Image (cartoon, rainbow, N blue to C red):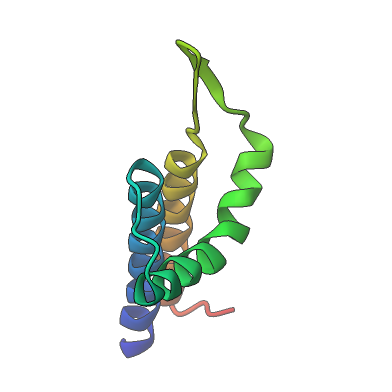
Length: 95
């Protein structure tokens, strides 16, 4: 049972990192050394996954501004994958 909880927490933490990336895209993050490390970490961890969805879904132009819906789809896909992995692990099928 602990492995299932660990995997669930990993998916939850990654979801929170993606949400942090989304929020950082809406605000101006101050350019200070402690925050730079955090911002760089979040970008380095989330960008490979989000990049897949950005290549699949182009930005939607609305009133001269582009809206990127790929993080929403990425979170939805991550949730589905997390549920699938949880189900497989809880049924004892393993990988």
